[in-house]
Image (tube, rainbow over all chains, first blue to last red; front, top):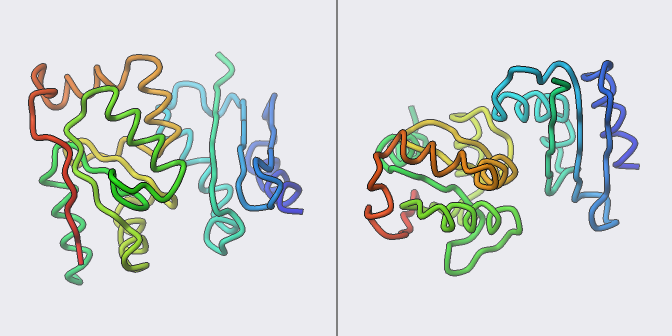
Length: 77
Length: 120
């Protein structure tokens, strides 16, 4: 449930992602690992790459759905 | 401007490396805070830690200041470096030590030892 919601939000934010994965790390629906590879990250510092992911997931971060989030981003170049 | 936010901004501005975390370096309460702390320790960073758990307003005010939603948050000389994943990635590639050298000088390892400050 949580995984599908996060995946949906990330797909909206990164429609051109070549890799997009959401893993529920503990099975409890609140500790997530997200991995996104997108040309939007090309040339951006890591901080700004993670900011884009945080912005895409702002709602579940704010409402407590996400208790812990791990982010891995990659550009395509 | 409220007093708590002012205190948080002071820590960010005045500490060489500020780590806002869940718990303290002696008693870490969260896996991501531990990952950030250990990456900073391996790089020899002079860490000043702030525990966000004593009052939920600390976290609210911090995120309002930094526009960063999650804990931990690491600042070097007033600039947000990132959360646990970023600090760990930068540590693995060697960029963390380079950034600390660039921003704090080549002798940054000799700076103050790990300490904890409270903002409430």
